[in-house]
Image (cartoon, rainbow, N blue to C red):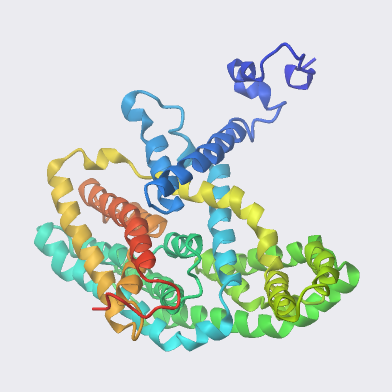
Length: 462
């Protein structure tokens, strides 16, 4: 009889399982193998690191990123157990699913009318956040700090500096409960525009490297696809959502059907975005924005709302009115609450996984470190400058919200490396820049947000 199927006697400590050959524990499945143990370690360690970061005044996401950096670099002290995790396709898929769920959650908490109100400003911020860093990297910082390289290498450096990781910034806003502030809505809208324009720049630079030229028709096609996808998915989705919700609620008005509709919509639009060459997170964000609470009112309300309604009749009128508003807010956000447990599982995996891709060996050469610091200053300046066009909001919050490169910067650098444009030294510089911008942004952004009380003006506006 296989030991994995043999009942454990009470006298055997469960930890003895870890001493057994791990393939035996997989009950014949080599596909999962150590993934179950890896996920268990990542989840528990992330939950331990997050409150530790909070204790020092940092957002939880920074603790998860630092945990990833720690686990991914234990090989430097002779512990190589976690080195294969960043290369594992199953963990990579779960991490990608984590950031998709995160952007779906952020989209659900973002009202379409609020996004429209900041649309013009977000476009200006997103455009500035692409153009300024690209020009800095490709034509100023690159040639000055890394002389003698091929012109295409400088173009790829500029493209990498133009990237933005909306997942990291969005997580900080969400953890601090500030997604409803105008600066946050501007950053989220600008980050979507940034992704689209960043994709255009990456496509143009890649085409220049491979073919020596770029077609205006190809650039126009990419822009048209992105605009049509965003506008079409939100517009058409908002037309379809009320009818599909009503039809599904007639079949089953329970919470499981509501959860299925919200998650399936997010996954379907993430797939569609990927299918046309956009980042899946853009589709997930669009899905969240289109699913307004009013479209989901045909599903049954939460049990706590039904149980508290009769008790409200015994309250004084003023208190009853306040309680009714509170219950209505809870009812409207019920679909968001249903996704929370899934987010608690998947989202930390993404940030730990992102941290694990950072290799500290890149910082072993002092020359590389000095160049990387200078490039990082240019990268931060290029994004912070975008906050200057943010209008009457805290421009420091907007500017710093655009700073982290995260996994997006690593992807851009990986494309350049695959094309043979980026050598080891430039790749190390880019990785170091990604590390610094990714780790610096959460604490600085959290500090800026805590300085600005909810509903206040915009202190510290340059």
